[in-house]
Image 1 (cartoon, rainbow, N blue to C red):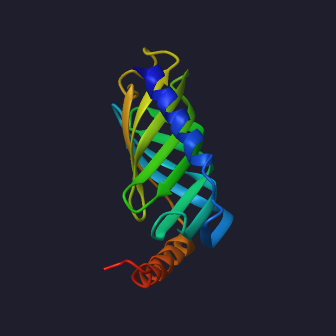
Image 2 (cartoon, one colour; image 1 turned 90 degrees about the vertical axis):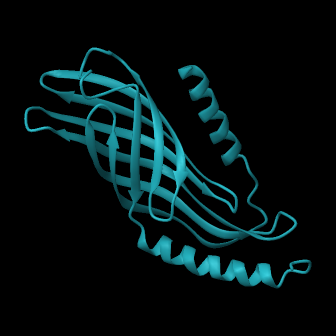
Length: 194
């Protein structure tokens, strides 16, 4: 099952990045370094703090029969999962890659992470594949962890995880709102719309 999930995530990333963007009227297209925050639950509740370097794109795609709003971000992040249960502190520095694509009918998030959990003189390397949906200001993802050692931190780290993260980019959110308004104007003026 885990092999199938990893293959599906890799195929989706390949498909998403292989799309032509020739017909997109870009209104925002830049690389930005922004803070990243989040919460995740496995067998314990973790807080995530870090930074992300993403390429943000907002535009109107004229490739289809009618124009539609297009929004995406993709890039790398460095962050740290922190578990503080007042008895044991576990830190999980991680490096990851995520892609968020918003289209009219769906909003998809795909992320891959390498996490090194350490604490109490023990370590555990985890590879995590995540898939989910993006809301306006945050992403909600479910993930599957491939653990180096199932017995290390077994009371805190599981194979499945639920997480909510956000890249704090206020300018991107404002530009997205303005582009959606422009998209509605273009859509209403397109011949054939009722």
